[in-house]
Every structure is written in structure tokens, then in C-alpha cells.
Amino acid sequence: MLRHATVIDQTATGYGFDFADPRQVAEAMRWRDDVMADNVVWWREHTGHRILLSGHNNHIGYTPEDPRKLPKTQGAFLRDRLGSGYVSVGLTFGQGSFKATDPEETHMLSHTVGPPRTGSNEHTLDQVRYDRYVLDLRTAPGAARSWLAAARPTRSVGTAYPEERNWFDIALGRCFDVLVHQDRVRAVDLLS
Image 1 (cartoon, rainbow, N blue to C red):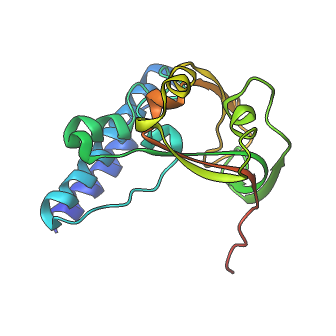
Image 2: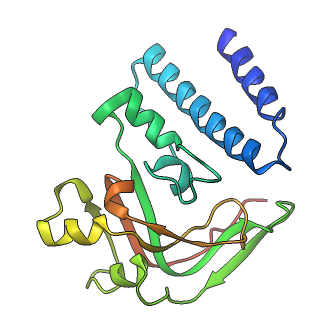
């Protein structure tokens, strides 16, 4: 019960930030990712269970898409607290459809995007002969490591789409431990 009360307090505190002030937005997002990490670590410490955490790449990775809006990610906080006991798995795709809310986050809609832009991470990942694969970035060979260390445009789809920006310069090898890539995706069918 004490943890439930703590989470209610965390949620209420989150609403105390002024989202019209860009500095407070960044502070609120950092604070939110920090307490989300606290809750995951609390669960692990109290149950001893292994945990599969699912979230947007921008939260579970180690480096944020836009540090001005999110200075430190949940993944970075978890790595600080759990060390190599935390493994970040990023997801990328070339083209297809997906579900996301409209920018006002009022309606869930299907969205479709075409092939990734030339020079993007997804464009290069689509050149692999497999249409879907898992890549352990921690054990990638030397030539791949240098490619993975360079930041290049990477598509981002969060809760809402489209947003002001949907492409960010991300170095996959610095952001994730493992990468799952699919050339094509299809929007899920929502249950009624």
C-alpha cells in the first residue's frame, strides 16, 4: 500500500510542473523518467523477478532524442542503478502502418509511412538481406561498431503522431544494447 501511495504522489507531483515553460517541461520529463526507473528497481528489489519493461525508444534507451526536452532517460537511470543488469532493446522499422494518437492525443488512428529517408539508420538497416532480425550491438564487429557509433536520422514514433519532429539524430550503438529491425510493419487491430 505504501508503494501505491508513493506512485499516486509521483503522479500528482508530475502535474505540478508548468508545461508552458520549456525549462519545466524538461525538468518534468527528467523527473518522470527518474521515478519510472525507481518504480522498476523497487519492484525488482521486492520480488527478485526479472522484468521486461516496454516503452518508447526515447525512454528505454540511454541517450535521449532531444536532450532539451528529456535530459536523461529512464534507460540511463536504470543503467546507473542496475549496471549490466539492464539491457536496452531498441525497435526500428523501414515502412508500413502503426497506431498512434493524433497530436492532441484524443483519438487512436492508423498512420502509414513510406520508405525511410536515404542516409537514415532505417534506410541502411533495410539493406540487410533479412526482412526482420535482431542485432546484439554489444558484440557487433568492428566495422559495424563504427557505423553504430555515428548519429544519423532515425524515425521516432511515440504516443502521438505526427509530432513537430519525427526524425532525430541517434547513434544506435550508444543508445541501445540490442536492436530489433523490421523492414515492414502493420498496424495492430485494436480490441473493441
